[in-house]
Image 1 (cartoon, rainbow, N blue to C red):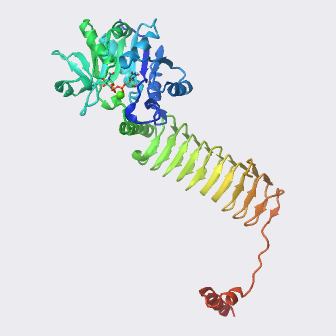
Image 2 (image 1 turned 90 degrees about the vertical axis):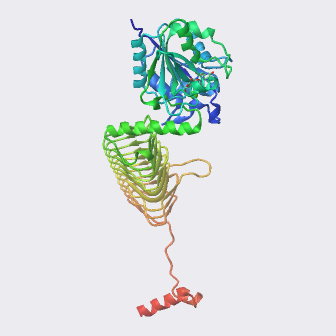
Image 3 (image 1 turned 90 degrees about the horizontal axis):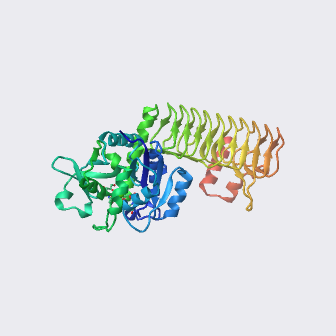
Amino acid sequence: MTENKLAIIVLAAGQGTRMKSRLPKVLHPISGRPLVGHVLTAASRLGAEHIEVVVRHDRDRVVDVLAKQYPDATIVDQDDVPGTGRAVEVAIDAIPDFDGDVLVLSGDCPLADAETLATFIAEHRAADAAATLMTAVVDEPAGYGRVIRDAEGDVDRIVEQKDATADEAAVAEINAGMYVFRASALREHLPTIGVDNAQGEKYLTDVPALLRRAGQKVAASVVKDVTVTFGVNDRAQLAEVGRLLNARIVRRWQLEGVTIIDPATTWIDDDAKLAPDVTLFPNTYIAGATVVAAGAQIGPDTSLVDCEVGEDAVIRRTDATLAVIGTKTNVGPFAYIRPGTVLADGGKIGTFVETKNSQIGAGSKVPHLSYIGDTTIGERANIGAGAITANYDDLVKHRTEIGDEVHTGSHNVFVAPVRIGDGAKTGAGAVVRKDIPAGALALSVAPQRNVEGWVEKNRAGTGAAEAASRAGRATE
Ligand code: UD1
Ligand code: CA
């Protein structure tokens, strides 16, 4: 008879000393989620009755993130007794009525996906063991607990690196730190574990040996893909594990029909969504909850954070956050698109243009060298090169409203609050301080006055004067 109830305990109480960080280790992000978030995402797919996260170090910060992002997890506080054994003990004590299988995971091992874990649980159930360890045979076992097997090849015990003899340290099979236990096995043996070891901690890794002494079966599941066991203890491992996770996400989207020119320099957060026939060029970062529709071309050198991108949009060398970029739009190169920008279908935000909290209507274009902030632009308008919406009067921000089919001259300043009516036009260099009625032409620059012969008179002997005099002769 297999037991089908499942509880999951995620260990996240350790200090993470080797990270040398102000941020608790399990909150360091990769692929747009904290490390512990990846573990909880996988855990949430396994149909568990309980998911508990054990916390202690920097408890409030960890709890704060968990409460906001993973509200289904129950928080369990570890007391002053240190060690993974104690962490699991407080968690199992917090669910006194639970009787089933207990999957133990580490908050710093984010590469074990739901499928791997489901297989692991199934193997435990098939083996009908009191405990099953996930193990891996690795080239460099240093730092991990070693799996010591008996003459029959069965798991006998785990020895921590710091307690291992030279012979034990030479064993290449490591304890991945992921286990399935029968709840009863934990309840029986955890209270008996002491702290008589190199680290003065209650080791969870002592449980398998105790089960063996009690005549119970301990199974091992040796994973083929050792990367699923990789944990993060320092920043080098953070980058390596981050790279592996990204490679997985990139591959997943490639198989869904996304062209990714350079997987090594393309970073896609776990929550992002890409449609088939999207093309991502090198050095592109698709972050947060960004959603990209079919046929869009993004990059090179582009970062999109929490953006919505429409079909067939083309976005080159752009930095955009919390923006909606419509269908068949054209963005960049070198655009800086800040939160609240909405570019409607067929619109353009061009070269060296910054936008913020602005709606740019369908077919409207802001092609060059402009700042558009707190602005509404209607449809099919064209904003001349070098336009600035002066939205800030030193105290508050004001809006600029530009109607449909408006064409503005180059180098205009729109001093908000100001409205430009439908179809209006402005001259080059205009400083627009007053509303412009629909259909009007606004000019604010004084008429040009040419002082003939000024250069030859005042700059005699210079190259400019000579050039002017030659031009004079030529036109005579
Ligand atoms: C642990 C295992 C080791 C295994 C390795 C796999 C033990 C004693 N050792 O070592 O055999 O090879 O994982 O990655 O279990 N934690 C708590 N409370 C504590 C201490 C730790 O919740 O009092 C949490 C940590 O936050 C972490 C996890 O348990 O998420 C593992 O702790 P860590 O100190 O990283 O153990 P390792 O030395 O990696
Ligand atoms: Ca670890």
